[in-house]
Image (cartoon, rainbow, N blue to C red; front, side):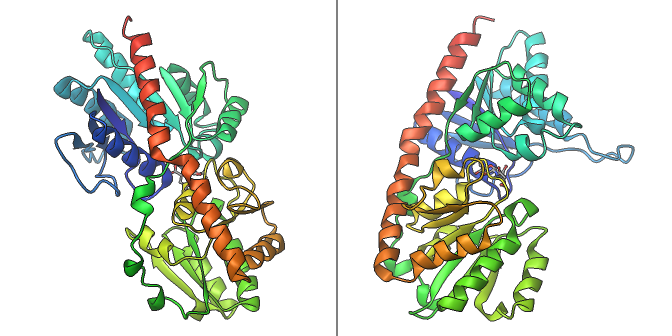
Length: 378
Ligand code: GMT
């Protein structure tokens, strides 16, 4: 099948999922065309089956805002015609599903029908999409998609609650390539990061408010009072500066390392003992799954889809949002005893196997096939 994938190419779960999906589909014999404004961060290798087409938005001084969705829909039309793309899979409703619908209409005029599969990732629904400014366009784009998927049951329920959706929503959870997370112990340079007796705690995100970065620091502050520990903060975003300030104010800046965005997530996870994700809301929590796949237990909130990913008392623990003391106690419970820690590490790996890409990617393929069959008659 020739599939066009539209996503946000930057660091962030939706782009990562879209890229990994495209790469796996290409291995399964599909021809994949990524259509986006820059090459997705995890898309390192282009091949016969994997293509990248850049959406360029020409600057024009008359426009205060350059019209990306216009440029994207035109690019989609051109690429569908040039490469014979049979289906568009768009990740994130705004503006991708919207632009894809426009492209579909333009192509229809020329006698070409290309179905659209839209995957909802969370922020497009819970944070941005439900804003009254965007709500009509998001509702329209979802209803006009030929198939809609969401990354968790919780996100599906949020979407049904917040929008007047007339389409079925298929839940297809995010996934992980477990083989990639099987690291070689000789590569895991733990000794460069911490002393033998220190526990390594990690947080990875885009440092937006929704991630509750101060809670990460506060939980770590409590942990390091009980046990020798280091905190690895990975990512860039608006809350980073305040986080650095907070570590200084708490007198723990010598125990916290801020890495910035990293292409070496697996290397950092390989020496991590615990992952903290105290988010306000999280449709899935791909970063937590990536941690678990590397054998790192997770302390998270119980919001959104996190309880579908992290199993309380098995792969980690879940607490209410803002329950700093509870999260700290749970973290210490896991970290204080080496046998308990190694049991949780083992469990985290076991839990991640539920999301092995070999089980999940065929679900997308089935949706593509069903959608093509259903809509090709039109
Ligand atoms: O959470 C973010 O900051 C990024 C955002 C995105 O759109 O990439 O993540 C959303 O999609 C991910 C992939 O499906 C999910 O794992 C995240 O939970 C979800 N974020 C939120 O719901 C806040």
